[in-house]
Image (cartoon, rainbow, N blue to C red; front, side):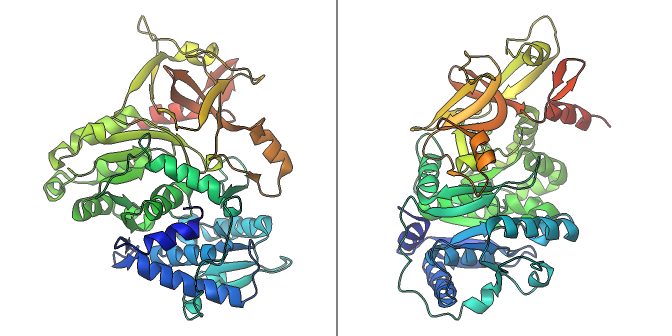
Amino acid sequence: PATVAAALARAATTAFQLHCIEHDGTSADLPYRRLYDEARAIAGALAARGLSAGAHVALVVPEVHGFIRGFFGISLAGLVPVPLYPPAQAGDLATFTRQARHVLEASRAAAVLTTADVQPLIDCEGIAPAPALLQVDDLLSGTPLAGPVHREPGDVALLQFTSGSTALPKGVVLTHANIGANVAAILGPAGLDARAGDVAVSWLPLYHDMGLIGMLLSSVYAPADAVLLSPVLFLKRPSAWLEAIARYGGTVSFAPNFAYDLCRRRVKPSQLASFDLSRWRVAGCGAEPVRPDTLAAFAEYFAPTGFRPDAFLPSYGLAEHSLAVSFASGGVRVDVVEADRLVRESRAVPASNGAPSVRLVCCGRAFPGHEVRIVDEEFRPLPERHVGSIVARGPSVMQGYFEAPEATAAALHEGWLVTGDLGYLADGELYVCGRTKDLIIRQGRKYHPADLEASLAELD
């Protein structure tokens, strides 16, 4: 499909559906046909408020079902969704208020689509022009649009704000063509190798690219059945994720490294007999450093459930590349490198003579039609097994950061996306070492914080 709205319109002609499980465990089926009708009603209500095509509409809705309806309602109206994380995932109300206000101002949002509970927490005072505050449920009574407002593949489809881990969040501008290219790569033979009967299961936040594009939009574009859990439910009870995979016959599910470790520590041995994970053929891992010991321990612990180690699919990606850059199917492959030479000489060589070493997980090759290179500080390509800056090129790369020309110029260099990550290639496959800006330099030596954190985590 050429656009997000066209993908939903096509999915609505099938019998596939979403199953939404909220933070309190309540659940409901949402067939794509009904989702399309509800989204058209919301789109009609937005159009009636005079919002012009291409206007930005912020979306902050904690409920899974409400977020999905709101997102597609905005898209069908020819508007641009700007997802925000809700208060419960902000850590505290002060952080939510500060970050939400920054996103509203930076995105020039014309409206905010939210709920009755969240609306009083949104601070729009002093923002000019002030965005209209609208509640998702109130818009369902709108006169449905006959069909999606026409948009071109090159039109903006999503304004995805980065996590803001190293600075204030920046708005990543993605077109329908960007999202379509990335979803096609994810679903294709070099990605998930999507097949009939696949069922996606995810607790990943829908306001984040991995949950939104990787799980929700990929399911709609496929189209396929998907089970979407509230991230709050997973954090309260990690076993809910595995229960959903077992109950609905999940075949594809992704999570960060910490989620696999959390399940191993929180799921009791007495619970294993109640899980059947034998249909889980793709267990994706990304969004943070992939630790081989974590995945090996998970596979061993959950072996009685039918889980297979070759289901693991380590991945690498970032919001500026829509989502995914590379997948490594067939299980976890590890390269052992000498730590001292890795950071001191910017060169990865096999460990020897008992020298301190690090184990890095293969993240696979660039998708077809996309490229990945390793370059030095002068942007010159480095040979294999030399550590440098990871850069990527292809149809999934963002258009830039919204109204941030300096940041865009720093991130896009002659068509290449400068990811800000360090890594190297071995036999054409990518190994990620860490973030460029996160390096700790002490007395001339360089240390990766993720390695220090992993070592600290092993201490009692």
